Length: 267
Ligand SMILES: Cc1cc2nc3c(=O)[nH]c(=O)nc-3n(C[C@H](O)[C@H](O)[C@H](O)COP(=O)(O)OP(=O)(O)OC[C@H]3O[C@@H](n4cnc5c(N)ncnc54)[C@H](O)[C@@H]3O)c2cc1C
Image 1 (cartoon, rainbow, N blue to C red):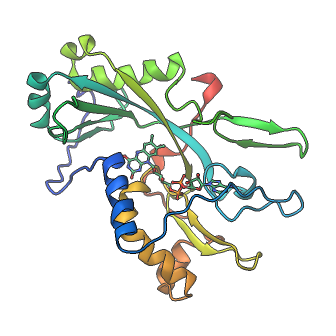
Image 2: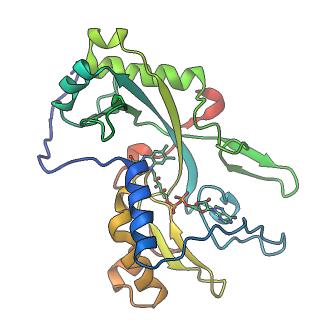
């Protein structure tokens, strides 16, 4: 493991992880069982003169105007055989903020289904934009690749090399023979201080926004709905309403090193 220039190690013994795909499926099943009607709506395409969409995510950059930027990070999964996999379950989730490694390892515990492999996830803590010029309006903004899955499974060779640096920095020499089996490029909408935007739009009646942050939106899934409902009912606690407002000071940064510093074409 590369500990060049390390001066501080912070240990959080209460940290943990949960598997997104299975959790989301269980969450949806529980909601349906509780009476929620699952419905897939056709994508709403806003009329040009409105230039607004009821759903804001990294798909709708024209709305954001400096309040959030569509950006992405690269992650990768290593599938391990059961013998090696067990060993990895004993090591902690760790974030190696040092410049030479700049990434994370998330060793997963035993697979929930017998035939599935043990897996270890690596993540590069460095985000990038994909700035494009919109010919009709002359505006430039960042947006994910224009393909159905935003090319999530096909990072550039440069991004793969950056993730390789993370893997080798964390695992050291033995890591060089470990092959990353799958990649995911994770797009999200990042705000200048990484706080969410959960608010009524100040200039468009009946438009409510609940999105953005710092690539960490998923882990708030069990609790965030309560605040969104409070916002819709106009009962959001004033400090939170101020913090998550559309127009705000954006002071500070919860996770500033995840603001995009790269362009995809330069990766
Ligand atoms: C590969 C990957 C790994 C991640 N890993 C983690 C992690 O480990 N931990 C963590 O906390 N977070 C993680 N995240 C981030 C997390 O998933 C996001 O922060 C979160 O999903 C953002 O929620 P959202 O509601 O803003 O947007 P989304 O979850 O993107 O939801 C937006 C929804 O709007 C829909 N939509 C968009 N436009 C329209 C339209 N015009 N009409 C109708 N529907 C529309 C989309 O289909 C989508 O369902 C990861 C993300 C990715 C992609």
